[in-house]
Image (tube, rainbow over all chains, first blue to last red; front, side):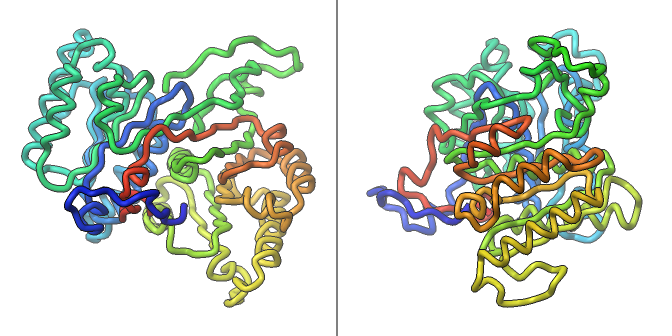
Length: 204
Length: 204
């Protein structure tokens, strides 16, 4: 996409450069596939900028998105070995968060989601990453496992220059209100409508 | 996204496996950013499947999407060196297509777009890649530089198992009709509305 021109210049006391470099909260929502896919595409750009990439998947099963995970792990190794791009960390709720190594916490999704959010909060407060992908994070918010008001407040007060991308259906309105950029993926046509099941390399 | 269940089972004489493995034509369209980003996210999965990835960018300037390009070139090197994932080719119209090495063809976009399409057609006919990303390809179609009817016919008759993802605004209706999966990216909120310009690592 070409660089767009802003529709208007705000009166906020910031220079164009300051506004330009403002860290963003981005939400990918809607009923259609592509929300996570686009978030990982964005993370490719961040990797190329040398940002530390932190992916946190709030999914029960780690089966999905194995393709992206393998590719980002390979990019992380490229960074570690050659210095190109940025470092990559990839964490999944479904196997028990790697920093606790507790297996079997899948039985208590609410506790696991809380634990994931607390770690993300710590990382945001210590400026651990340049780009966070909180994949499927709208679900623990929707189900009340993680407090949306707290998330909005922590995001609003995060220090430094940290971009945060949150994906998932039914993003809470207060999160949409707090976000800088919100994209909704809308279905026009999907092969599942015609009886086709998901397939390897396309759906996961 | 979890694997969905089809809404109905078609009467087309195919087994579920045959339908499941059907190669897809995918279109990412709409007014909002994320079309190309999601296509490259999809290509990550294809890379992990070991598919040969062919990216063809129908853009005038090669400035955009440098982040994705660098990341995919790194993944291509990972493949060449370790065998992990698939090979990657990345071609840009804006610098003159690499297979002709003609520089300066930017002056005649219609001829350059035609030449790009002819090469893609040859590759489809010889089953060169497992996944094609035809980035911003809707524009040469829209402007009549490449004949949409011919594209639809070549896609319909392509042999083997080749997925094709086409991105760009204003996808022609006959292409949408011919596609298996169409996603429209819809803007909910964008910082440019509030006077912010695009920024590095996010827009490109």
